[in-house]
Length: 537
Figure 1 (cartoon, rainbow, N blue to C red):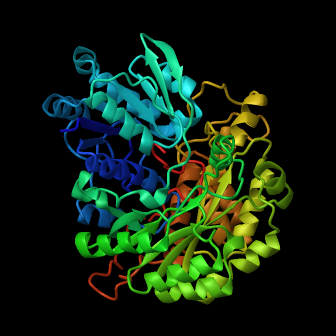
Figure 2: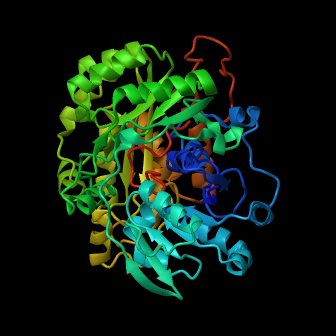
């Protein structure tokens, strides 16, 4: 008959894409006759984190979208999440609770478990934690008294084996990829199994989520949008990202974490989304979408020419060519997000392991403009050893790139990234410190680039990029969080929205509804960045 599994997904309003990992796990577990439900805090007021999309709207990083969210009734719930999770647990009576969390949402996940602590203990319900944070900080995660197991690495096979053991009431201390605790003592650190064959995975289970979780903003509109997997892992070694450590984790097994999904399976999934769920927009969440060879690329374009829906990708500037941009545009590419990250070549090479020249980045990013492809550029500031003066090199390169949006985030030293180790070695952060979201305030207190200066760059980044340099003295005053500074910023913001902010997109389908009269200041989510929401995988 199977068992009942309850996923806990601690998430903040504004991170609107449904979690593909949980949706995948649900599909897999249902194939094995288990029942699955989810408690998702996305549309609750939790007082844990800021509105991620909304903060980017406020900082002029994205096209205004707020009114459309309200029009679609994608608003915060008016019920208490504490009462709701208790009610769900008591009514559902799960046999297993699975907490899937990124580092920035870990503490909210623990708060949710605290609310159902009495029920968990009374009914002896085991709790497993998984995700990118438990994978790279298992020692921190497993020491919490409400966590019984931690999944280190991919979770597909571990969950199948765990649920089978619980159903048959057998000992589950020998499950690969899982650390086991008993009576607050770690009794087993099981080895990591080979990477799963992603071509054997089923289509994700979107029915697990409420209808409003299928919508998210993009370029000033709100679409019914689904996440689509084409590639798992990334071949590049950016030091602010967890991909290098993921690769090392599996390299010890003689295996490669980086895998590609067969295009015929991608096509099958896309057709299913379109015909069954009436999806309006596809979101390819691969870290570097164009990390594919020529044959794979042509297969994708031939396949997608039958889908005929707008789609978004993220990739690196060095992966684009005139040919692939023109071809992607012809089959429906709507927007691209490019990770540039920093504008100083030497700093980018030495600290970030990004080795491209500025002139090459600038030249490459003229190509999407040539074909009328809207794109955003992602940047980070507040890296260890960086200064405010160096941050202006990032502003300068963005001034030479005619992007539709320029995003800026404060660097976050997430566990499982090479730069986290550097920050710990330099005494900038304690090894046990749990970090916050990339849209939160700066989390490193560096004497040469203190938090208030990082926040000043974030606040006025878009203004520095778009306004002529003759206005820079005025913008410098707007940096300050004072009555005068905020008044100047408010006036500059109004001018920016009028002169430089792209208008919300007309419907890429060619009609339906056009929101050109939005007054309030989309998002490209947190793309190609250290907070990539790779839940429980």
